[in-house]
Image (cartoon, rainbow, N blue to C red; front, side):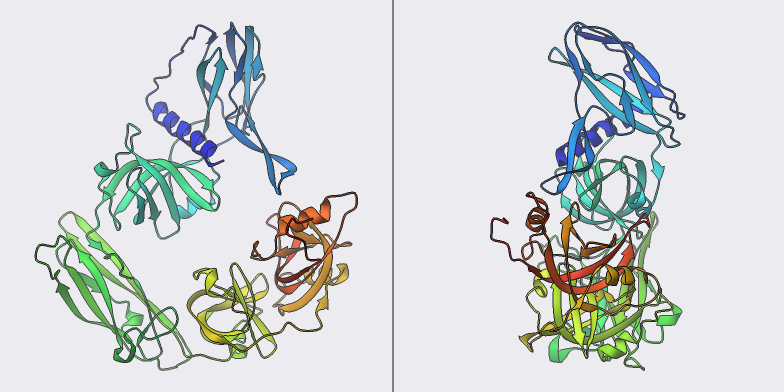
Length: 566
């Protein structure tokens, strides 16, 4: 499917370039002639007609993929290829030799849009361009691009944070509001001339492109290069900009271990490549009482013939926490400038508080204040896992740890092991949660954990009771059992008597094959049911506000299916 998306975007990019020159010309083939090859539909959607004469059979090429509502193939939405995008229709898309009047129709729109169509006839191709309204690449932030619909054109400026391919020019652009993957970079002629752009990590680059979503990644495919502002201050490969220190001001890693071991000191070292005239720094006033830059030195490569740059090292000293259980953080901005401009890099320092009991950490959540967030360090036993994290258990309470910054392999087989985490505790969709996890340390020896012997039964009445409290307060994560059938496309569990569904949260398909269970429930002459056990962790309404769901981490499904899923 990716190829189709790329073709559509490449065509759109070419059309955008052509639209700036107004060089559209009527072309005639010996087998087909059209009165217009550039078709302009007014914003109000007034239909436009084009006369066509064909001497052979003809048909529009089917370039656009459309989902078929309510239909599925192997549990994915069924699709078919059509001649036009969903916003555009043509009165006839195929025929035999003869004269025709084709009517092009589109709904009313305020935003410009454009499509490339192709008529196939006698082994030849007649290209058409259909544009509605005016198309202009809007200046936007990454956040605005992420929120926009696919196909819209934007001009975006941001920092190059990573380069993944230098043949086609694939790299990541981040402007502080979000990140976009640039899948190919081209010049005015549409060529992938990466070496001519002189883009390095840390540079501020401006590009123009059309939004495409591939899976969960937002991309510009073959974005047009506009300009680059060279960075005068860069981070060497392997160096970091985000530092963790403990309550005594000693640097720690993502497992909470001291960096430097017994030789650890209450200071950290930030590294830079300086290309401007020296380096300066700014410490916010609220940070000056506990963090200071005490030294800046330059280290040259040991090999005099090395082409590696000099490294500038800034030493930052961090004081001990006065209140050992209250975190603090701040950002020190380093700058370098010359006559042509200025560049800056932010170095963040987070001072992690001492560990507190999980019950005390849970007390930091205010059910009446959904926006309250508190940085804590706590520990417990891992009770259940999923792709996105795990449940932490202590003293009859459960807490979801959203550990998206750590590999699932770190914790997926660690039920019964003690885990220590540091991050932001809050409520999310009425459920208690720790997010933005900086530290995750798991004990290698298991202390054991057993699911409760008496799970709560969620029948229709109980499910409706939970759903009826959405937004009304913090729920207690609870072990439960329920019986129902799975439905496409999300494989939610439906229990008879309620419209609220139970949604598998972060399911590991290698452990529980929901495709196979969905087939089991729905194939055959009679609908079958399954029984699940797990922990419900949150509740919410769908985006349209019409339907509700209870999110849960599954720990067991019965019956067990054979390997062929039958």
